[in-house]
Image (cartoon, rainbow, N blue to C red; front, side, top):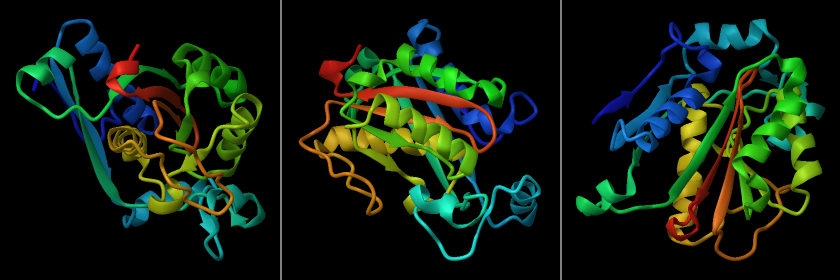
Length: 239
């Protein structure tokens, strides 16, 4: 591999942003002709007390009985339920994949990222959505952590721009995998495209979807800072 981006690089980029930046950098290198394929991903173990302490010091952890992401504002605590897992993506230039006979699940569009001031989040989300072209997506897969303020910001964006689009919050099934959350959402979208079936509702409040999706938008807001968006499409609909 010409680029391998694994694990935590908190000494290089902010921890909450690194999964978004690494996907962006891997894809940018391929499109610039500097690489043909990349392995991008991360793993997170939520069982470490120091990880939970960091969330709790900022009052992010949910408390009390489990609730779906959409209902956590009515529950106790800060809304975030941590999860453990690892996700690794092979991102590859199309001709290179064809030459080695690799199965292509989906095409990945430009990744737009930002890690600015949380107070300017709404305007940044609007800009990222415009740059990525998510208004054309058939559905949205959310890498939302469940943290209340960030959840509210994403919900407001979806209500304003995609009121008719089904949204799937993967944290309802996996919890928040921190660095691995954005790659996980991309993987879920790519598998949905490859199988020709929309992602099923993950909680009662999520609307059902129609036929096979041609394009899925992936939206990721870190639990404190950093945002990213990307289009995942069938190879025929790739930009």
